[in-house]
Length: 169
Image (cartoon, rainbow, N blue to C red; front, top):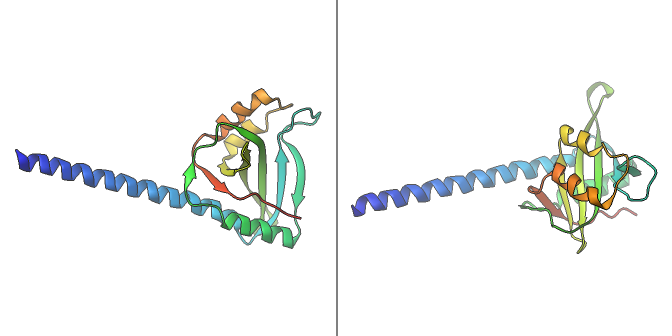
């Protein structure tokens, strides 16, 4: 009987070790996907922000970075993103969308999108956005504080990467 108990304990341990290894592998793959945003063919980055009291559709384009020095700062910022994921903080201050535009083959453009959120304590988090999620996020004529939780639920509560504030002067 002790041998069966030991065997079950050993199987349980091996299964949990394998699951943690799979989780770690998925986290590395997701992080590598974030790092791929710093691709050498990066041409420009458009920054949009959800703003209250604006007459424009939301999110509102607030900046476009295209000069090589700015692009290099953005690439370095992406490369310094932490490897571990976390949940989004319950209290957020600002929500931005960063549209990374790349030069593709035959002069076509390719795009990738990141959500960029600042928490009330000024911590910064980023999250990859799918094309389907982007369609939902671009569907706001106006932005009210009550829309914040809806937008964050579209993006997802998990798989956020903590990073530093992006500062371009």
